[in-house]
Length: 368
Image (cartoon, rainbow, N blue to C red; front, side, top):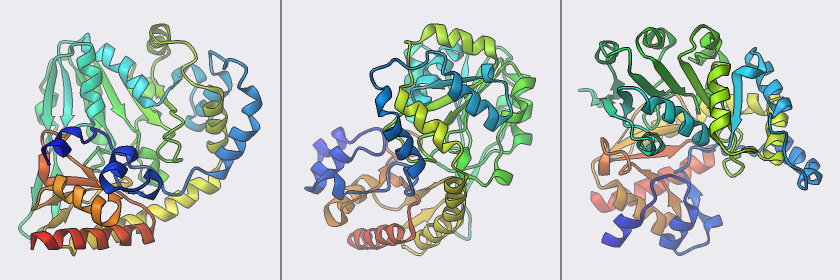
């Protein structure tokens, strides 16, 4: 058991690791640990990749002109305000380099592990600003945060948050975020899961980006379109800032197949509507199902995942689910503020969600 605790991965989606514990092939694992859409990849992406295989002998356009234009059209911006990257993780690295140059970087916690990785790479002075996870008297879970604590900080500091928040799923409102831009020297907002919300429900600051040169927004195309293996994200920020980033990084960060797939899916309105139709009822189904299981308390979320508090060791529960049902959940031991009594699950299809609920019910029976 001690070896198991030491070797578990820090991210979700490690099917090779999970299969080694479950004693099966990676393709047999039902993965709830990575918050990736179960509906994709869309056919438009597959067709675009196949059509552009002939481009493999050639280097990509180093300026990503056509991709920038497609993203600019989507967000009603000029192309110089956009920088594509090898996943939003690459762009997070350059944002962290800038944050590290400030007196302090305020980080809303619990936080995605790559934030600390990137900040520590440049010796950033990190101040953690914890969310409050509460269980009300009626058993309902809620996430609270007071912005007053950070609004009193020095204007020579930076702020790194994600919205919707990972792993809690809390959605911060635009009206709460705008005052931060007047306080901090640099505000980096990771909106990797924002596109899972209906357009009228989104709380993005993209339409305010040209008003605030101290604002950076990171976006991902791989979660919504189930293209995690392709690696593609983009940053939206002042052109001067993005020009600095371009000089820092390696050339040709985005490959020709990723460019082709991205340009195709951005126009795939049918797939986008399919996702927005699938997610709300599937998330509600999973949330209500989790609420019925003794020992589990799910937090309501706005994205395609749910955080769950448990009365048992979630690492042991994870292990049990793999052995019994070949199902992988994301334990939260990589989030120091959460530890071994929380896990996160992606929202999948209705039938997959039911398999998870049956597996959890069976796994929790050992604790009753």
